[in-house]
Image 1 (spheres, rainbow, N blue to C red):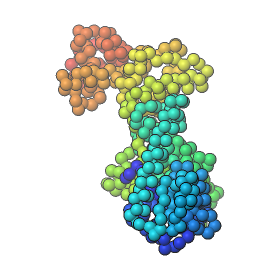
Image 2: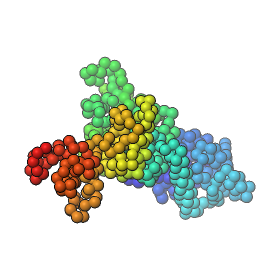
Image 3: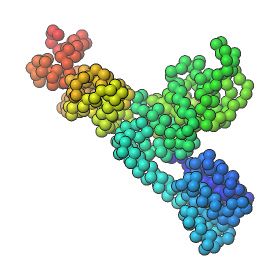
Image 4: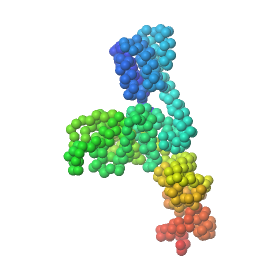
Length: 471
């Protein structure tokens, strides 16, 4: 699926034949078109749908004319493209159109190819302008505060994610957020909501894995009194509670198939019934969904409904894993240290360069959440002013040393394709060989504790590897 929504165009023309002809001409080349005979009706719709990229309006109309439509449309959507069409061409009207920002002007009878060409150009120009403005806004925000909507990082992948968040926040379409566990998918969902027209309304998260499957339907749709054992009163569901706001469905890939079908119908119709109910409830809710699973593959194999997948994946955002933005690790670690130190009314400890290098070389399977938890632990347990390598967990130091050894000896020792456990074992055995079997020196070389090394050697001996006798 494309990451970019299709261009949406609003046509305003009191002439029914001309309005229909323009709408059909643009729809046939891929535009999403809404057409109105009355300027006030079009403007009312625009206020509820700020994801429009082009306004095409006639000049002479009853009520408010095309000039006023353009002026008010630009107030609602400052960067919307504007195109005036009229059978009453004049220098004066063209000048007025330019004053309110109309970038183009076409005379009736319209040349269909000219209309399509001008529409494409205006939409593309507007998209490029918005992307540049969004990127400037992102860079300005990140440079000034060191964070973007609660997310910390300046890596190129993160800056691109911030830009896309700003772009998709403007539209109403569902968004599918992909990323590993702990990478920050809910933060992305909250950022989209806060930057959308729904920011003042409710943001409701629902973790599809934290609720037993038999209760998830009730959590999502609500239930009536007596719908099942224990249902002693009517209870509204998350869809109902999120009316006019945003519902975030975390780990959507774990939702059972029958519930997927009901969710699809609710998204398509913006309506549903409570469990045990007979009343059709109508809601205006934007759906954001997230998963750490390969939902596209699951849809292909039948593990997830294809129609629901395609509905959710109208817009797809991918959150990079922490190992894919290593340059952000020192910034994140320092940010967490300062945050937790402030919360605990303590002075934030400083990471030594050696500790930073170890953090950068770690695998971080738990991503930002794992780093966050480690920094919180260090603030609580460490009383000094500096955090060095010896203050970091043994497992992290061992894995980091193994990774470094693998990077340095991969060609010579043929480590490519081995598991992390194999790489770790090779690093430990090589260190022992280089130190003549001196375990204390080997532990220092690896940056791990002597007890950790002894425990590893005992494990290798039990597995049948020749590592010598004793502890």
